[in-house]
Image 1 (cartoon, helix red, strand yellow):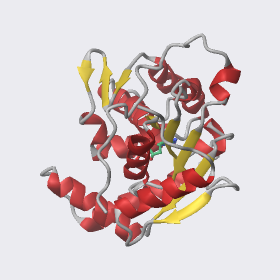
Image 2 (cartoon, protein in one colour):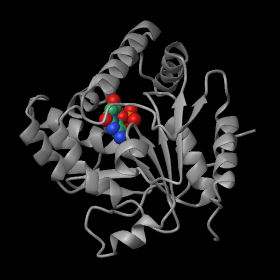
Image 3 (cartoon, helix red, strand yellow):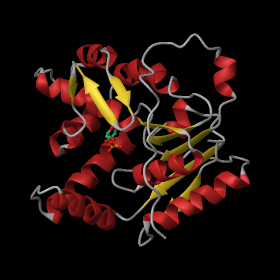
Length: 249
Ligand code: DC
């Protein structure tokens, strides 16, 4: 089975400003939370599920990546929590699958390995996480939201209708990342990627603020050796079981 194409509504339109809607109205909007470690396949699954359901999508890692990218650009130390939190509060646009900051399309820049490593370092600071909390919740808009990250089901959307925790072996995750980077013409060794993934896992799971962890009510999905289409189908089946149906066109 082939993975469905990404939805053109992959992300909510610039949800940085408050929309004046009531918190209660937002709370009735169904959320599918997809958490998991780096390169576990959660982004691909979230994208495929959002496309089929015609829901909005939040790639929460992109927000941490944006803070990291800004820190690297401005030479802000990655341990200066107040300065990083100020960077997290700066405006940005999240349209479809493009991220625009300061008038520049930074989508490709955010995927670099230097930004990946820095994102996991800025994400340890509670002040940074707090600065991004409401911004993430603002993505919850009708007809629904598929949100992926590390703490979607535990902290940001604890009332999500469905919580999935996606895993895969470190070796498989490193191999997937290797394939993606080679396809983009970026030369890296499998060994260095495996070391980087293991270091990121340790940092993401070991931090005290919102560590990477499955919510007690999450369904764990091990994608080792599983094709993306099959993982997407499995999550859609869980959605159906929870009464989450595709939105009407
Ligand atoms: O999902 P990703 O690889 O794009 O995330 C980049 C980093 O951001 C990741 O190493 C940890 C951090 N992150 C986080 O702490 N909480 C989230 N909800 C999403 C990402």
